Length: 373
Ligand code: APR
Ligand code: ZN
Ligand code: ZN
Image 1 (cartoon, protein in one colour):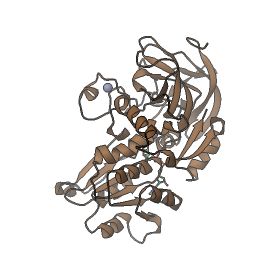
Image 2 (cartoon, helix red, strand yellow):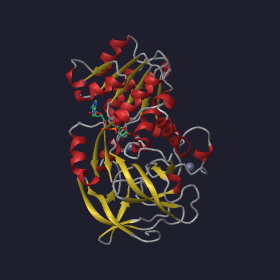
Image 3 (cartoon, protein in one colour):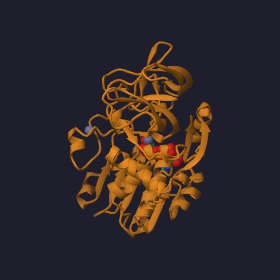
Image 4 (tube, protein in one colour):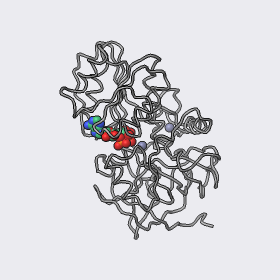
């Protein structure tokens, strides 16, 4: 029985930029309002790549990962919504239910999130991880590249006991992030034209959302043509590789559609592609949704005059879902075959092979590689 005791287990530690190794760590028991989870699976998301490359202002050393599925091992005082043995997903955006944002019907960016800014610490300002006596930071309070993690109760979604744990980790982040960007944030309409910049895990889920909304044309943009066959299978009608074009990609999108698309999405995290997405939308009622995470010190530079045409620029995080309320429902929808995430799981590897998984990711071979614990 491990309840109330420190657990020694294996976890990945990012020591700094591009420096990651699997180490023996100590994971303290959960404090009041916290849950300790035994991870079963974790996806490798584009945001983790930003973290590992040092593109976000995070404190090192840290335990990376946020797209996790696991089983509750023990709970701290006051925890009432989950119990040991429950299947759960970790939530990079919590839902405290009490802050101004949680109380408002719109939006999901709970005040208790640790993304903007990131402290790397639990809500009480301390860490639950240590390695050889040294304090190790959390990432977004939901570190998942570890056999055990501690997460605030408000960042845990209890899911159906029948959930296939080797896949549903994608519903912790990538699937709702992309799908919700299309169906909730952009509100893609039947017969509309769409362009999706970036055909990774998130971009693929955006394509699924556009398709489910009845878009008639979905243009996919990626510099890696290996992503095109899978994107076509999900609903992309036209594929563009900006590096193989004679002119800027937004000009090609403009020619293909006459006036520009109804809905444009950026799922890469580069300011150049954000500007391309904006300039791919039609003047008047075009909607550009930014999902990619840019480094906090970068600035978007747009022609200000264009905003008076009526076109919309917006951003969205985790698909605009109030996370604890909505994410378990997406898992149920998957179990009832209303949404199919299986095509996004292209690889599965044991956690011990993290380096191989990262190599496959960097080589552009994966949509999602799921780590199995
Ligand atoms: N132009 C077009 N495509 C690009 C470019 C570029 N300049 N640079 C990279 N890409 C493509 C990659 O080839 C890859 O297919 O963007 C895709 C990114 O996909 P992933 O690495 O799988 O990342 P994903 O998990 O989809 O996240 C994408 O969304 O949530 C955010 O932080 C996340 O910024 C990240 C973005
Ligand atoms: Zn809140
Ligand atoms: Zn993510």
